[in-house]
Image 1 (spheres, rainbow, N blue to C red):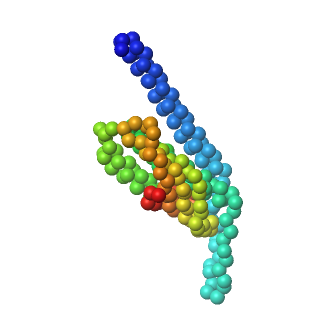
Image 2 (image 1 turned 90 degrees about the vertical axis):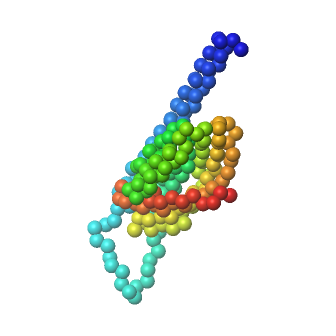
Length: 197
């Protein structure tokens, strides 16, 4: 192969890589904006009133009814978190975790920061490794709008690629999420991947 052909092929590959990175950056930014708009439109809905009635021991307890808009916000935040948290590669040094800052609690932020440091140390200098995650469905297992707590399960499809991003191994995995409404919106407080199906 001539030197000229090698240069042309190299430039073409470089252009494809730049286009792929641009597309991924746009995709992450677009998802982030969609989640932010959902969170910000209802940021005061979960705030508690100044005085709450005290529970008396002989009165029946009441069931909290979830407002449809709260359900939609919880599901949108859960799906966004699952896809961002579960999609990464060693080439971007887990920058996907930086995109989670506005939808996680302080407790979760501490865990994410420690996890990022340990994972970057594990894979530095290794061959390409990446996982993409797509949220398929969300189920709210429990929700208390007054206390600002929810337990959610997101079913995902994931693709694992080693050495190259071509032909990833597809598998399905659920992630359990604990969510808290801290007054500024619903945020992830803990996350736990279930065993791979």
